[in-house]
Length: 288
Ligand SMILES: [Zn+2]
Image (cartoon, rainbow, N blue to C red; front, side):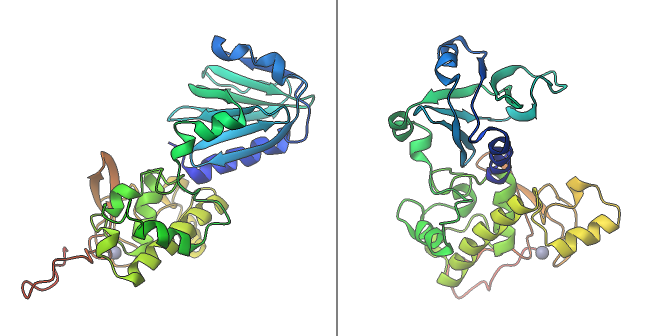
């Protein structure tokens, strides 16, 4: 499933062809939405925003097109009247004089007023957006220390969209690895330094992935892997989908675990539990 950085890039791509332009034709495949087509025709798009993994296309008549693409939905932007080659089902088409923005396969689509956005069951629960430039590491620290979240394992927290919106499966593994954090630790048992490190990694890794089109490795390492001929999918991540391959920092084999029903990847040497029970024995356990 696309995560915050992928959704934001799609929103930026759609913005380029729709914002400040008149919508000259509209199509909805769902009968419950087709009544809105004539209301959007002739309106202008004022912004295309992302909120976590949801996208909001805002029109100057007060309506907003909401879509959450789940696993299969995808937006295409094409010159007007040139349909992409795809076997997917067209759900929404927004046409300007020069371009079309086409949403395929998604099923979670709605037209909302500002009031309905405020009350929306999914949007109203979302935590701060991972790519919101106004969010600072201190805000993430505050959330980790919040009574609603501090007693839960960080592995579970990082897929909860009410904690922070936009983190999905690959960002979760990559953030925790970058912070040297162990997924079964709970914020309340971690010292301030580690909590701060997790907060900084949260923003740093997500923003880097947005800038680099989905690469969380440093540019130097990614370039080095590229020069060795590795394909794109094998030169993106520190740990995600690298089970059995050596950690880039310590050469230990990366391990795959299942956390909240989804795969999480970690290095058992770089990411050891920091919240071991404090007893005289045994000494700190290391898993090798
Ligand atoms: Zn390691």
